[in-house]
Image (cartoon, rainbow, N blue to C red; front, side, top):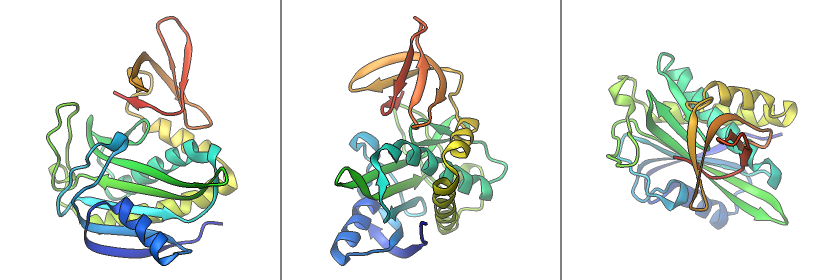
Length: 241
């Protein structure tokens, strides 16, 4: 059974994922850690992209100090995305948050946040898992590749710490539920909140591009599309453009 987090609060960090990993390794933490930083100066997203944030945005990381099978990584990615959107919808009940595979969060068709999962692997198992979360609250970067937005455009309830604690609660609850009851609920919930399900999408994998209709995610958390030749393509990793 997954046990609760120890909390760490920082005024400033370069990267919350890097900070939480350093704390774990330096102090030999045996418990899981939830870390919130007021300011993050060098955060990163997927594919080593820079994550832009300012004081007042949400920048946090969660170190789940528990061993998992490597095969469970795709399911855990979906579970974490579901945990984030559950936490946001609990606080902002009227806002239309959606998920984009594999780990982006959207609001009204604009990106508002993202997740970066990193693993420590030993003996072909996940030794511990780090989940970095960034949510645009008071600022959103200008991006030429996609539109972005921020919570302050839709709400006056702007409390990063409140969102942080809500995410913490859902991660704790959901890991224990997943271990006992399996992946089905998280798969269904993710698909229910997908922004692209049933649409034509473009996937980039290893600098190659694939077009097709987004059919579903499978029991490993992989995305499944059908191309124009009616071939079914499955991607355990990649990026929806």
